[in-house]
View 1 (tube, rainbow, N blue to C red):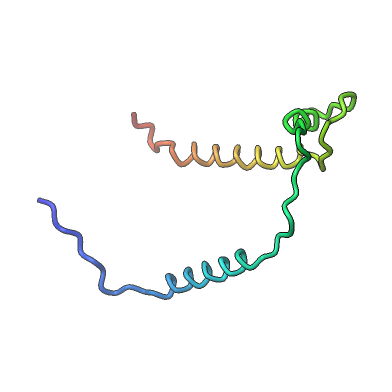
View 2 (tube, rainbow, N blue to C red):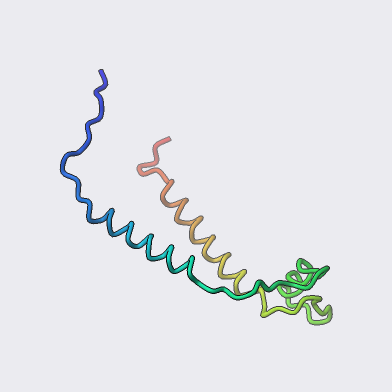
Length: 99
């Protein structure tokens, strides 16, 4: 027989209030920030080709869009995703070799 869940009577509201205050502070900071005018690539630019040239460091084929380099951000994201995948595999592994 199942029983109905009961609500807890002794709740500490301090962590919840701290989370709401942090959320409010971050919302005010983001909404009041001045990001300046929107900047982007010129119309008709071959951005994908330029990223490919930058990733493979092709010097003979000059990229169409100048960039600060896409290789290091790509490697940083690849490293973080690899670490997350490894952590997920470790957490999902069963203990004791049960099937």
